[in-house]
Every structure is written in C-alpha cells, then in structure tokens.
Image 1 (cartoon, one colour):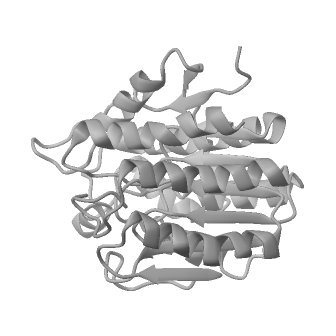
Image 2: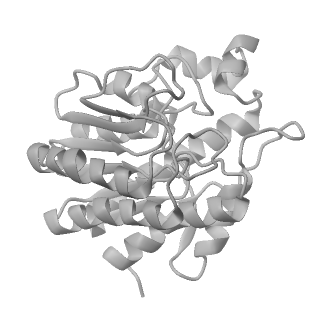
Length: 296
C-alpha cells in the first residue's frame, strides 16, 4: 500500500450565486478521480494562531465575523459567508497536513491550496489565507527546514507570497507567470520569470530547464513548495498560455524528479485552473498527484 495520501476540502461547501466563475466543481472532481489510488482524507482545520503567522490577527477576526466591506469581498472574488471562511481554513489546513507528510515520507499532496494572492491583511483572486507563506514560516520557526523554496507555476504571479516572504531569511520565492496577466501590479519575488502570451509546451519547458532548474541547484532548498497551477493550459478562462495536458505533466515531472533526486521533501498544491473544459481541468489538476505517485 502506498505511504502517500492526499487531502481535500471538497466536503466543505459554501453558497455561490448561480453562474459564479469560481470552479468549485474541480475539488470534488479531483478527489473522485484519485479515489482508490491513494487515501484521500478530509482536510483538517487550520488554527487561527497558525494563520496569524503571516496574516494580521485583527483582519482575520473581521473575516471570521463577517465585518468586511463590499470592496473587500469584490477584491476577494467571493461573497462572504461562514462557509467560505471555513473552507479557506480547511484548504490551508490541508497544506499543513501535507507538509507533515512531506517531512515524514518525502511528498505531501493537498488537493486545494496554492492561494498565493492573499496578503497580510487583504484577500484577492479567490485567495484568503496564504498557505505557502504559512508553511514557509512554520517550517522555519519549528526548525523543520532552513531553506524553503516556493516554486509557483500558476499562470498568475504569486504576488501575496512574494510580499509576505520578501526579506525573510531562509525563504526563496520563484514565480513563472504571464507578464501581461493578473495581477497587473506585480510584487518582487526572489526570481520572477514573466512570459508573453501563447507560450507553448516546448517554450515553457525550455524556460524551466534554463532558469528554474539552475535556481533549484543554486539555492538547494531543504523543503520545496510546488504550486502546480493548471491555468497554463490553452483556452483557460483566465490564462493566456497554450500548454497541453502532456506539457503540464512534463512540467510536473521535471520539478518532482528534481526533488526526488535531491532528497528534498516537496508539498504540492493545486493553485488555479479555470478551463472551460471541466474534465480537462480535473485531469490536469489530478496529474500532479498521478505524477507524484510515479516519481516517488
């Protein structure tokens, strides 16, 4: 039996207006796709104290109580409800659980998370709690790692993560993203690689081999956080790249195989994916776990 497992917040639903663009369907779909291949567990709850490692506690309290403005919910992209806050905690809790797994067996998988647009006291782009920043701070604080590297391959820059971890000793943020895509005001990561529209599989993989792999070799993290966004696929509603599913899987294996060879624990998080083809979105998100099972 596999020593690996994955975590999903799919059981924690929240109300959305009809036709809302948030792709809630994919979380349940990915969990169902992977059921039977490895244990898929409900995500545990993240404590507010742990969230407070990177977020303003007073701001968190306002979100808990629903004391948020229309402007704040508009920037978040989701209407406030008890359920949406609970679901955000659960999604981040899955990343913390996956971190513990990674430290024990080399790889941990969250079937959610990658909420990289959340700042210290502001939400954005469907992101309320920044799990990658929390994992970095937690691992450094507890002495589980000395050098934590976040590789963010979502099509959108990980602006919140860059802001939260900028100047933090032992943290390295790397983002490969669409230069002309959201967020239109970029933050400064330790390494930002902004690409033009229409990037193909071969062009994308060339960039990873020429710039991302050397960065991994140079920094030599002892913990790797991988945001495996699939909004890099062609025809994504919010993306401008042109990758295929096979290109996404080649990308996944490049990162995971490096971690395996280097003996570096890795946590995988889903991040974004908004393709009009729902089945493709689900399969692409599931692929990071399918690839992980092959590599590890």
